[in-house]
Amino acid sequence: MVISSGLLLVTRIVVLLVVVVVGCCFVMHRYISGANFLGEIIEWFGFAMASNFSLSGVTFFIFTIANLAPRAAQHHEW
Image (cartoon, rainbow, N blue to C red):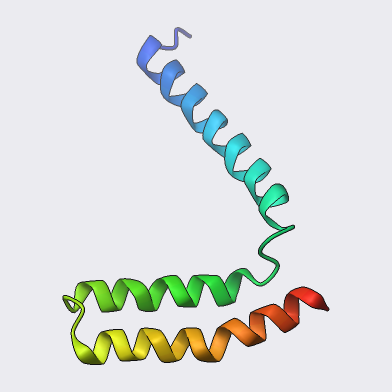
């Protein structure tokens, strides 16, 4: 069976991306041990951005940070 060069290139790129992502996860765990908190903060930033930084979107983002950042810091210390 002959594998086309395009498929081979795509396979190599996917393998490289997987290696980079897994490597970053091990390195970033030192800085971010509660990824769920960071993920929710990023989600609400996206909501604020999608709402064109309306007052309600930005307010919800700020209150999310105020609520989750101390919890994430406590989780990281534990």
